[in-house]
Image (cartoon, rainbow, N blue to C red; front, top):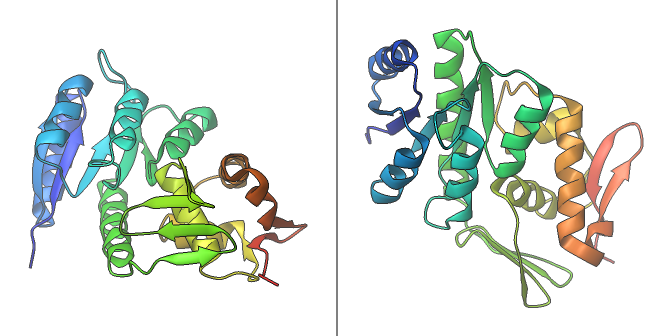
Length: 229
């Protein structure tokens, strides 16, 4: 069985060692980095299977690290879990919009972090097993290349927006509550506000242009992708 490699980007030495201890105890290979800019370079040279990312870093902060990694096609698929003392919704939503898959607020319980790491790795493995291209009207969604085109023109989506669109497009006509959307595209036991889901829907619609109208709001329930006629 493959030993998953986890990169911890955290400048607090005590928290580094706490995470290292519990991750290694669960069988993961662990590397710790304390500097955001150095972390971006390290990920580019040897991409890990998952990243635990603190937001409060010296120099390049965690959101900038996330933005850099998700902007590079070579590192964009790597799942990122934010671990931060900043519990404000704005920080959480910003991280999710940039492509992070989950978050944990300090102080945290190691057991909770381990559960989220396991869920993140399992979900990514599941996604990687189904690379069937999905077509919807003039839209083409390619999971293997992590690419979306509309009438042949590329659409630039974050990792979170891509997963959201793919989930809807595979099941046109089916209505999903916000909780169901979170479970499907973020993983089990994901704690986030309804507002974060709504923000991602707004961003996705905007980037899809005229096709954004096909992501429909079902008032009082959730969202769905309109059925093709």
